[in-house]
Image (tube, rainbow, N blue to C red):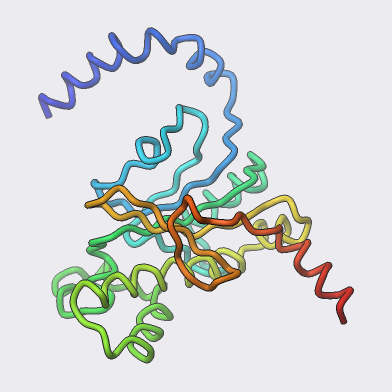
Length: 223
């Protein structure tokens, strides 16, 4: 705790003062461009990773970067996303998984969740991930299996995200884009899912997709 208190004093002295004008503007309102959804893991810092400043990212974090699909019992995740999408009009949503994720490790090895009933229940929202891994990655084990599960979970959560009414509305309108990332803690690399290739590729090689509305419009012309 002492280190945190010292950090606050250092922030106020060395960081806040040079950016005081920015913070005064932010006090009047926020206009982030991006909703960044990631894990609660202490080893991932969205602002550090993206070199973004206060006010740039609207951040949602939970164990396993999980988004429950739309349903009658919508909770904090749905409320946060709705505010970002319908209230703040963010233009991009990133779901960012990460290597060595303890939540996903527990998902594929549920015996590790003994004594953690709340986490076990929460990970039910990733049951599709568990099934995909079980039925398609039986030839993998160890770190390779975990990495596959982390990547598949990002894709599953993107599909869950599309079920939320506020997101579906903006996707149909064509002014919102979704992105799936995986961050490797030990190398600092970021990989993005590329729909054209169906693979996670280094971010430097990533081709930003068309809006989903544009894809649907082109497909309707083909038909």
